[in-house]
Image (cartoon, rainbow, N blue to C red; front, side):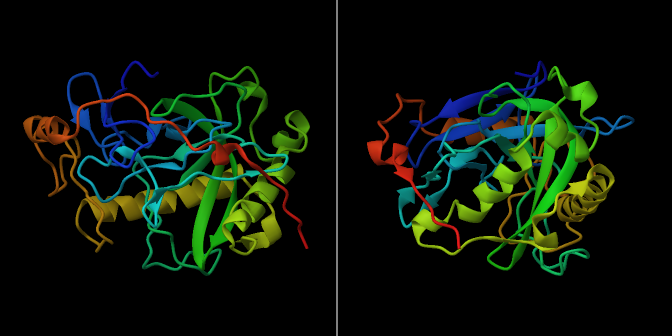
Length: 290
């Protein structure tokens, strides 16, 4: 865990009331708004908020609608969401998360894909060797990006590596991924193509025929979605029910006090023991691609 950030659990893991709140040294914060995008701007090192550790199935995400944007498990039709094990992939095959202070604007056509944004912070696939912890904030080097088109929306997936990974110094662009992690890019495209098929949905599609774009391209995409966030947090754009409450963005009309932030956590359910997970979550699905 970063020395700067820690997390506080509320409710019971594996339940709809589970929440993971974030703190810096002395106050509760929003992981979406209060953690800076850049850990080291000069070297373009970014902060990544880990929502889903590698090999796990629970679809955890930063909750945009609630004050302070805690991580919670996605719910569909009243049920907790888990991604299926689509053979040979078990759960998520990278540490999966988001870049703070980014927002894919659903009212703006992406200049390179021609589709509007998906109304979320931009997603990150961290490919280093270590399995991260949920809620961990890690410093990452951007290597490239792929563009998923998810139900008619642009859903960028930034590919990055933890700066503390033993291979980080040798990984500088998307071309280095196949060199050091042969098969991972291909597996990543396949994962996104098929992961919704067990739920009865069609194969996902990609912009650029699934080609991974290089680091400079990815950095430009991040720059654009950071600008969209800046407009959001300063109320220069309308949002889709996103809570913009924050404690550190000085020029934001949504800034709240540390005391108000603590009240949010005080009202949340007390932490409880984890509930059991239905064994069906571990079922293997064998997907036939056309």
